[in-house]
Image (cartoon, rainbow, N blue to C red; front, side, top):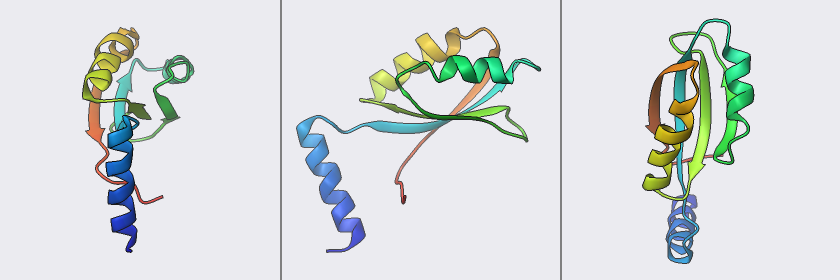
Length: 99
């Protein structure tokens, strides 16, 4: 079976068991000088897999997981946007991971 077949089969199995998750990258712009403070706050959330400060158009990026789209929506609205120094977010859903 190909790697794609295994991945698809694994996803179907996880979906049936109720363990399928939604993953996303969230890019953020934060108030200047608060990057470290914001990232230290973000890592406290159970939904966070990784958080990093970055250079470029955005100041930070986070990789998050949620049990479903409703959970992701609640996380973004209630938790992420509740951090005062985050003033802009862009969410990109992960379609497929390779490693």
